[in-house]
Image 1 (cartoon, rainbow, N blue to C red):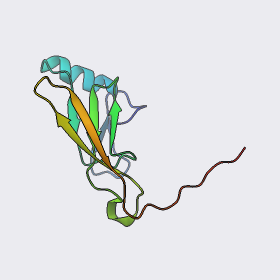
Image 2: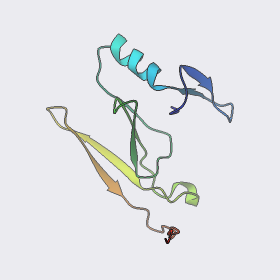
Image 3: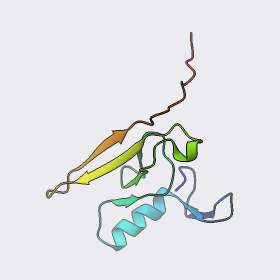
Length: 101
């Protein structure tokens, strides 16, 4: 997904496609659903919402490939469909630069 994309677009690496919030809304309406949960995209804090919280990306590999300082996320869905998240911080997180001033 891409925050500034409307409709479908080509991924800059040429291996997949991007989509905008309008695509998420149309899909949910067509299938009478409230939420799409997806994976396989690195997100900084282990999970990230998109399209007015109609799509959530969950990424479960902390410190992905040793190249990212991302946390991992796990999503739990209760019987009443309430979603909650657990975050696993990377074991060898690099210190992040702080802005002073």
